[in-house]
Image (cartoon, rainbow, N blue to C red):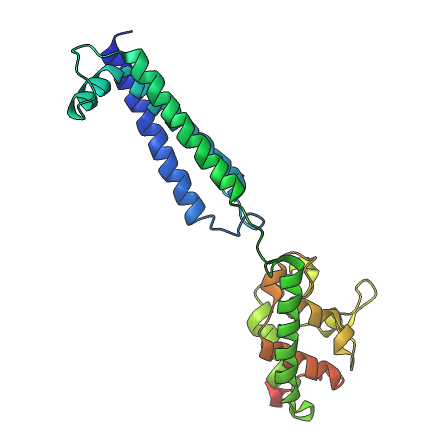
Length: 256
């Protein structure tokens, strides 16, 4: 193959690999940021899998650069050697310079890998996973309890204080127009249970009412669990309402 054509092909491949490095680096930095491996995916691949693709593209780019150096080795040795006064002959030994350069590069890479491998240290266990989740849950529970302690249960009115919480947060997915999971927030029987549905509310027992577990974010084994989580103030109001007896009075014209 003509050397000029070979150089053009190598340069085109290198350009595509370089663009691949930029593209996968962007994906790892922005659409799939650190810590998103278990929660996000892009085109069927997680952050770790895109990291593997990024790695192999970099290896391909490295190999192409090696081939590029080999094709231009004569020019590299001649120009650099003469400028550094390392070459005194018109036709320097390419084999000798190649072996010397490969040895230096191999030694450098080996030293880097050895240093990196032996410099790894264990850090204090981070507050993640179950430990972090437990700590966050405790903090949120304490904050909710503080808000709840300032609420007067006797002053709570269902249609004024409680139903607006359901209406503002749940109506689009659990109302007359759409009933995900066959659940409606405008029907009391959907909360207090029926023949085919267990109750979500246990009057005067907010601690064991499934509704509180759902809206406080402690119930994780359900679809879109995070979207069901409400503010601390709303959770505190719901707890106080349930502990006061969870009355759901009939709505009269005077209360509309």
